[in-house]
Image 1 (tube, rainbow, N blue to C red):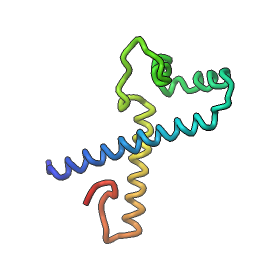
Image 2 (cartoon, rainbow, N blue to C red):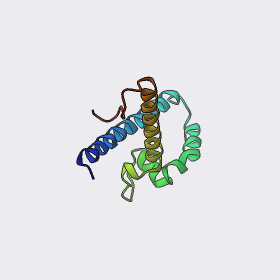
Image 3 (cartoon, rainbow, N blue to C red):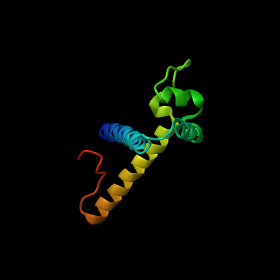
Image 4 (cartoon, helix red, strand yellow):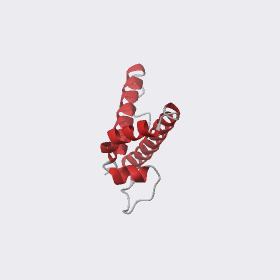
Length: 114
């Protein structure tokens, strides 16, 4: 395997992880802004409806910043992270395709260094 290709994949992966974490952080901020005045019952209803996204109550409690009796899975193994990572990777591919279509003489992934 070509060493340059391997390094490029590591750099792409680091960029995608960073974009994924930032997108999730922004979604949390947007939720807090949109629901800051909601009643406790409304927030609990929301938590109940979204509990499956976190993989159960223990993960919801831990994600809320409350102490958990068990060790939590690493961020990169959680379903919500995996779904957002996939979205970020797809948006990077779409961006690459748009760039290649508008600049046919320039090929390559815009996320990878030249």
